[in-house]
Amino acid sequence: MKRFGVSLEDELLEQLDSLVQHHRFPNRSQAIRYLIRKHNRDEYWESNEAVCGCLVLVYDHHRSDLQKKLTSIQHEFHNLVLCSQHVHLDHNNCLETITLKGKAIDIGELADRLIALKGIVHGELVKGGAVNAGLENPDHRHEKCNP
Image 1 (tube, rainbow, N blue to C red):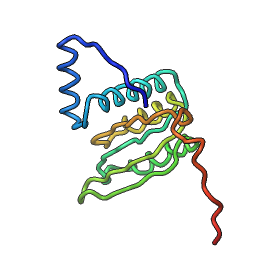
Image 2 (tube, rainbow, N blue to C red):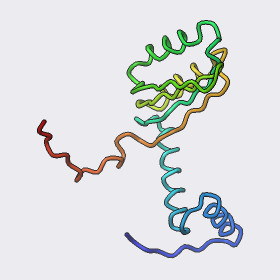
Image 3 (tube, rainbow, N blue to C red):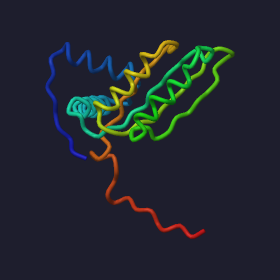
Image 4 (cartoon, helix red, strand yellow):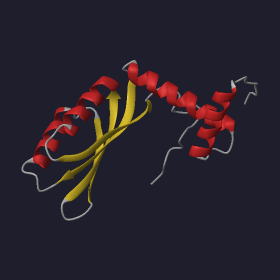
């Protein structure tokens, strides 16, 4: 870990301190790390890198053919869908989370198509980082498992 000094205008320092307080970071350094990682993540998505994400959908399961359409579209993008989870929120509403990995533009297209379906009450794509950009520790090894 390296230490360095940063000079900021008063207004920017106030904004940084507000960020620290809002996110309950233990210190300014953690807030700066957060901002750098967020910037990098946004760059990966804008550059159409291989990324991961999670699509969150809330929908009325009484809507005619909605579940069939959701499944059909996911099958069109089967190479992106790692898994999905379906939860019954109440008598009318379901929550579905879909874990995704692939090119950013393809994930965005899948998310847009699913969110646009009639009957979707809420849809949001949570963007994760790049798939092979420092997320894995090359020194991390698993020992062979013996059953």
